[in-house]
Amino acid sequence: MRIILGGVLCLLLAVMVAVRLAPDDPARWHQPVASDSDQDMPGGAIRVIPAEPDALAQADVYLQTLPRTTRLAGSAEEGMVTYVTRSRVFGFPDYTTLQYNNGTLRAYARLRFGVSDLGVNRGRLEQLLAAIQ
Image (cartoon, helix red, strand yellow):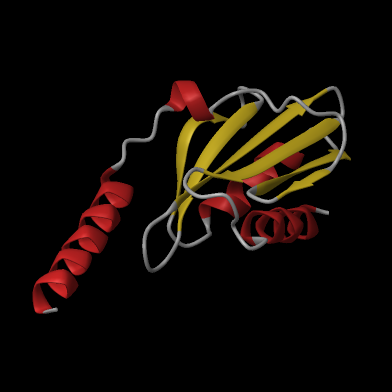
């Protein structure tokens, strides 16, 4: 029994290390937001809103203040930026891409591992939009 428990703990530890050390690939995650309407999905959400030209810069400032959040690629000046936010306990990465074009701000937050984020990404987008409006 101790051997089985030890094996399970080792496996859990290996998964945690793999999740925390998994490289973030900007070519995969820093992509244009391909939606013109709001969407809620089990692992994320998309929000599309009319916005002023400075909305992306405001959103950039807000997201950089969030705990465990770093910029992965892009910039407000380029019109598109992607961030990685890691969960507190296990360090699961979530990716948030913001894109501003022609008076529209598109925001896409999604998970990398698993099938459901329990609404965390949708909540992050709702807080972001409330903060910049």
